[in-house]
Image (cartoon, rainbow over all chains, first blue to last red; front, side, top):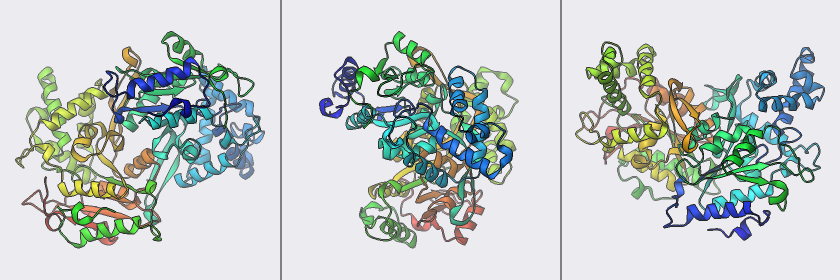
Length: 311
Length: 311
């Protein structure tokens, strides 16, 4: 197995890091009763707030905002209508509020936002959508951290992905974020290729035509990969139950709970408790933190467990 | 690259085999203008009638039939109701007719059948369903070929999968058949693991509980992975457009057409023209054969191109 000393250099030598290393030793030591064969070593990670920074708002919202604002430039009648109004006026608080209310169980604003999103990308081919997403992420700075968005991935988590892979794990992203948006940057940021990205998506449709036809987004939602949908989407994609999962919010609880089954499991919950190097918040993670404490999941304190946050 | 002479021994030395070998040479020769990097070498194959025998009825129908008949034993009120009546009376013609009518554009009988199927497996966990599927396929003989169902895979196609993999391709099953049914035997029969099987599925639901909860089938359909759904499902799973595809029916036309895009493509259409060694039929493949001839797709004649059909 890979040497944890060199594989996880951005992790402090704390009980959290030892729990990770001990778990990997447990399931990869041949002859041990908890040994797990290669094919069943599956590790799934949420994206926003788990692999990269999600504050002051998820990166994807910035991308959507830019597209919605561009639509207002084309069609002034959208200016007084949400979510175009918020996009046009750069009203980030309205948009961030949609996510916060969703975590609190109120999806009314999310529905208004989603209605805008499906219109924003209806008719776009999947290839164009991926190209637009890539251009946004690689061409935009984080609004407050003073670094490019491509430098907002958590270095300790990237090291963890490599450490798990070096120990025979297949790593996947399993996130409420948009699947094809994450695919656009998954390889560059995390070394995770498109086929290992599970996420939300609007409905798609293939139609025949030149060059074998194309697949375009329809103006309606299909999958919202959050909460109880996460285990279902992971099964649909892999036909396997993960052994390792990482998340940071209430929407990750079903994925974290389902991980392992009858076998040992490593369940990591990122606790955003470092307002100096990143952001301190528990909003949207209350139930996850409670369950983690009750069931002895491994809580990762950014403040105490990470020597470095960003690369 | 792998030597085609040793890699495809069950293929006769015909223009079809040469087209396969030439295509693989074309996209794997470094420095050639048509060279395709490893990550983009994706090959997708239909299952029923493409990788294994689908006559006198698809294998999965036999599995469903057995389950429906068992339901009649538990509940006599189902005896006069389709599809339980057909299952109880071993009326294979009624069931095969559902598939034939589907290919002809009439889905009424398929709908009756699907309504039975969703009831048949509602409440079953995914793990139990896979175990039941595996037990059926490995414990049942083909009704007319005088061999176990596990020996009804086409040997030339298995050789083709290995040949493509030896040349850096990622192979996938992309079939109208049930995803988790195929997963149960995909590794044993074809060397294709669960995460590379794309197919139809009833809706799934995770619920919390002991051992991290479980995922069960709901009594309603979700995905029917046939026709224009095939390109969409392949994209959803992989985020890539295949370079090679193989099919045998009208339902494979969108997948075959979509393959390649602006790049070279190998589109294989299996023509069931050998009533001595297998079955001769074009029902359900008329439009596919027409399009293959019109657009110069590679038609595989079982009679002429395969030296051996079954292993």
